[in-house]
Image (tube, rainbow, N blue to C red):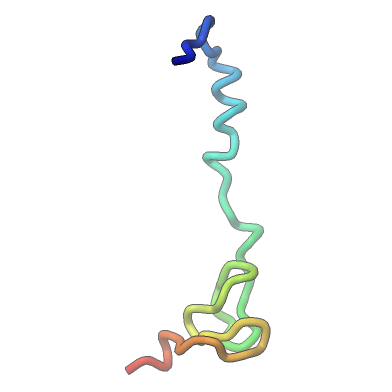
Length: 63
């Protein structure tokens, strides 16, 4: 089993973990159909549309 020869420094550890604390704010946009916030390239969970087509039953349509 491989064992590291030297201890990982705080700077190197911090550079490796740089993406752990990023927020996905840039990937959030508004749905064209219902104006609810949704992630890009994902089906809107509120109305169930994707790229202008109804693909799922949304939360607002469920009884």
